[in-house]
Image 1 (spheres, rainbow, N blue to C red):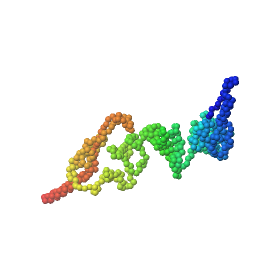
Image 2: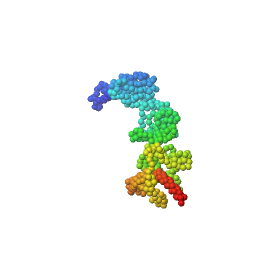
Image 3: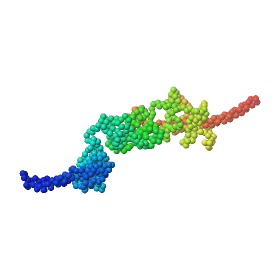
Image 4: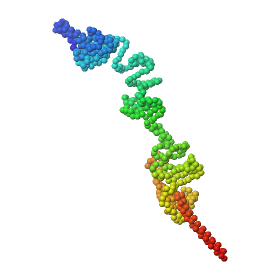
Length: 506
C-alpha cells in the first residue's frame, strides 16, 4: 500500500517554513486516493448477477454486490494485476451460495471458498499471488452457515442441535435426542458414558460390522461380524471377538460364534485360574490323552464303553495291559461274553506277520484253548523216539512257590525240562529283566525330578513252562508202554498155555 503523506505545518505560529499550500493539498489529495483504494467506500457500477471474473479496474477498491440467480463462481482478479494491500469488499446480497475462485492460470491462492447468502468479506491481496481475508461479515439475518470446520476452544451451549441436511435428527437443550435414525460417515468420539436402549450397526450383506477398542489410532480388541455371504439356513454373518497387535494389526479371533448353530469355537485352550480346564489345577487327578501318566485309585467306566475295534499298546518294550485286583470276593479280571453258542472266538493270536497261530473258542458249554496244528502247516514228519526214556529222565516235584508258601503244587523245574524238551520252556536260566527306580515318598508321578529317585532294582526274567507241550511226548510214551504191555500179554498167554499142558501131562 502506498504510504499516507504528512503535511509539514512549519514552525508556529505562522508556519512560513512549512509546505506551500499547493504542496500540502497535493499530499491531501494523494492520501484521499490511497484511502479510496483501500477502504472500498463506494460500490461498483453494477450488481453482479451471473458467474464472471472480476477486474482490478472495476472491482478492486469497491464494494461488489453479488446476487446470483443460480449457483456459480466469482473469479477474483489476478493478484499480480493489483497493488499490494488493495482490497475489495464482496457482499452476497442474494439467496444463492457464491463460490469464490482465482483467475484461471494465475496460480493464486484464496483463503475463502464461498459466501453464503447475506455474508460479506473484505479481501486483501499481496499484489503477488494471494488473496486473504481482512474482515468477514456475518449473515444479514439470524441464521448462520459454516462451510468448513468449526472449532470451539471453550464450552458451546446450544438450545437445539439439528443433524442432517434437512434436520432429520435433533438434540434439545435438555439433551433429548429425537429422530428415527442418524447416519455418521466419519468417526464419533464419546468422552463420557454412552447410553442406548437399542443400538444397531447396519451394513450390507457380506460386509463386516465392527465395534472396536483402540489405544490412539491402533485397535486392541473388536466385536465384529464375519463378512461372508449369507447362503440361507441362517449361515453367514457369524460373530467374532478379535484381538490386535500393538501396531493395530489383526492377530486372530479367539472366540467365534456361529449364527446357524450357536456353536462357540475357541481358537486357544481356555484357562481357568491360570490352568487348563482339565489339569490338576482345576481337577483332582485328571486323566490326560497325551503323555505318560500313572493312574491311581478306582476308575469306573460305564458299560458299554468301547465299540468297534480298539487297539492297546505300541511297539515299545513295555507291558501293554495289566488287569489286577480280581479274585474271590473281588470280581472277575476279564469276562468275554459271546453272542453265539458255538465257534465263538474270544481271543485270537497272530504272529508278527498277522498269521493266525491260536485262539480261545467258546461254545454253549465249554472252552477250547487251541494252537494251530493243521497238517498244511507242517512238514518233515517223524516218529517220536525213546519217548518213555526221555520222560523217565525228567524230574517232577511237589513243592511251593515262594510267593505262596502255604500252597503245595506239582511242577517241573523249567531249565531241567528245557534240557529234554526245549520247546516246552520259554526264557533262559538265570536271566534278568529291566531295571526300575525306587522313588522317594511323596514324589509327584506327573513331574518326576532327578532327586525323586532314591535307588534302583532289577527284576528277574523268569522262565515259563507250557505243560501242554508234554502231551505229544506223553502220548508217544504211552504208546510205547501199550506196545510193551501187549507183547507181555502175548508172552504170558503162551506161558500159561505151556503150564496148562505140563499139568495135563502129569
